[in-house]
Image (cartoon, rainbow over all chains, first blue to last red; front, side, top):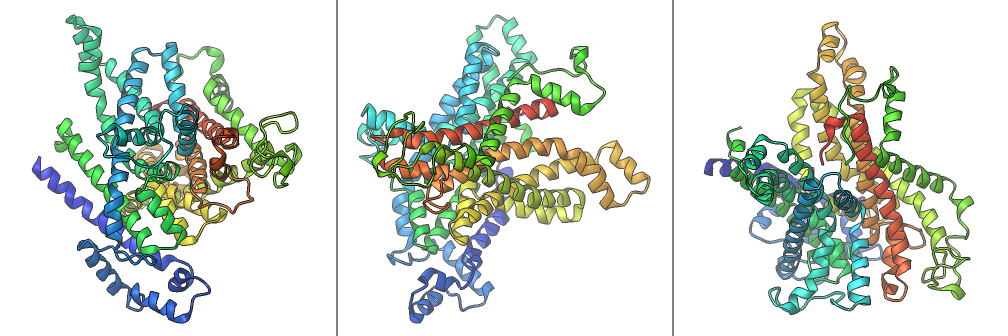
Length: 313
Length: 295
């Protein structure tokens, strides 16, 4: 087991290095002179020179990259071009919001998606199955922001049950939790659809297996057959999917945070783009990729834990 | 979702010597696929004939009719500047369809080429696929945002960004297909009779990858249109007067409380188009190759 984990960790290193190279190159891929682009067209030459100097654009490319990587390893993401604050400070403040949102919507999506998928599989071709599958397809086809605005209009503006945006107290109090409900449901929307479809097909596969027949034959209740035997064995593809889904959630957080005015990394990234604040953009993209790779690593390990065949296969 | 037909068990009338006709018959019988096709054909016609269909000028401001609900003059109401929402949605279909087509074309050409080369010329496989792995390490929306932040906002750059996002998935998909088809007997046979490698790739292997790639591309269209509207929504798309659906929803956020229809109608247009491509993709998968069923 430990060998497998170490092996997977080492396999991730080249990918992470590649990611850091691409993110590093972002500034150099800007068409024209990056320093002038960042400073703005009407900036004075000294200003442009200062930015060029600060970004180290005068050094040879490999030297720049090694310095960039060294800084990263020390946890130094540079400074914001405008507020002059170290980017890491801002990230530390905003990361918990995005993490909370992502974790909450993963939980919601898994819970609703798996339940819907199981119901759909058990009542195959019945009315409820068709309804669930139509709902799932709608969820997949609906843009995050339409789900969000529909929810906001109905629950916040119309019924006034929930706040329409911002943050309250800590997440474990109702005062904090009520601000997370709509954003988490919004972000979960698409994933619910995909997880429901995945669970359904996986369950249908499992319900055909001999061990289900055996379980029924020995007189177990239908509930026990479905939950203990079929569901357990059909959760594996869902677990794999959750890892991939996390990437989508990190991206979707950009939209959700914008709609519900949450002070997370997604909104931080967007405001940095309009201000052409490249150190912030680079840090957010890099963190997104880093987090995505790490979550998938955890999922891989979890997968091998759930299904020992993977390790030896 | 629908009954899955086992080969050889279809009624006699369904089987046909001509594969294209046979496919068409099964396709039309597949209700969800047909529904998807109808939606997409409708939106394509709307996009092409927009100037003839639209009841009003999508750009003309009319301050006497601001934020009106649906009426006989303005079927879907008017927005915060008094523009006809229906006309703007009709013109917006041109943008969304173009984003989908251009982005998927970029993904298919670049990704497909990378994947075909990786799968067919094995020495290059490792290099190309490691690069694809790195691209896939970026969450797709973030990858597209990164590209837009480099190139700057705008419709063309948005299409490029959405296209680049799909390059790694196309590459991985085509590579898998090429690897699979390369093992099949007819490819071995082509090699045995002395066909050149290029001929084998383009005349034997790639044509046999076509059906799954078509399914994949249809589902990618849905994702591309969705992502395009998301980028527009967060302000990385075309400039203001352009009637882009995602942008229309974003602009209507300020009046959501009093005039929710201004945001919701363009939102439903996105939903309907994306749903069309998803239905069509699912249906094509079922009718072209039942083995590909994933969900």
